[in-house]
Length: 432
Image (cartoon, rainbow, N blue to C red):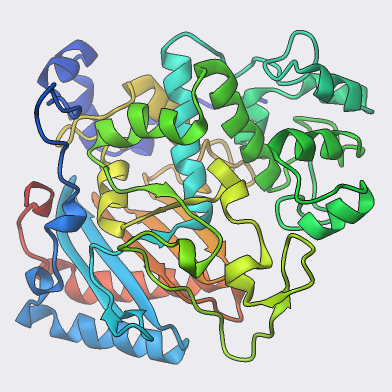
């Protein structure tokens, strides 16, 4: 792939300031996020934020606009957080977190963030790269690959699978397609096709998929692949010697100041204490449970194995903590970054409109970055703007538009920014 030279405009003016600060200095200034022996664990901001903190008279019009938007799309509830120059200036819940339980949405509620999880996974890969444990050009399979397990090698049918690199997985260029269905969302088909006794674990799933032909030669094209990000999650486990969730929490999320992000579970009864209830859109019918039980379930609670998505889409968290994570990988000086500047530059480098960025869906030359996520029962959008504002919204309800719904959320952000950005308070609720 031919890489173009990043222009000064592509990383916005704040990076110039940031570049003047050495990595060593930033490391020395970063406060410790791990508790010392005998001290209490850090408190998540989810425990300190409330709707009342963002009940601002001058923003009543924005509240009304958002409430109308949710009503139009029949969305039960949504959480919105806005960050400006690495300061959390607004965080509020709208509608219901759990209507049946009478729980309103608040900024402390956590929600499934779907494919926004991929941004967290990409940061984990870059952290391993900074530690000198991998390179993005390392191959994934075969005797010289990272996932060199004999089970995988014995399953490979295409010689081109030995060419797949870490970077190709990050950019959805690994050769995997969904021509036979997305393997992360077709568990019952895989059970039947490969005559399994039940839902496959990750090793078994990878072994099954490797027996299928690739859709194209790795690196020659791109096709969005959840399976590719499952492989990246397994690479993190193999290289680090830790399970994926633990590594990410200890090396990415906790250092970023995010203490209440977790791998989502499949059923309402398994939800975390401050997690929302998920809802399907009107007219949605029940489906067969993913595990071949024959039971009919709401698609958002058992239609798919959400937890098995791992780093491809299983994280849940609040929009406020998600803002904090973004602030920690954006190259601005106000919040110390958890990645070094070259890693951030690589993640946000622009090639062309047809090439996925590392973790992000898209990073434009002017400094506008986008990350979307959609699952049954939720829709998420992270929009980072060139002027330093970042708007994040996650809903707890599906819409009939599926992944296409995010463009309407983008439209909402655009209008709210035009009308209300000047009215947002000058404060930083990260310190609340």
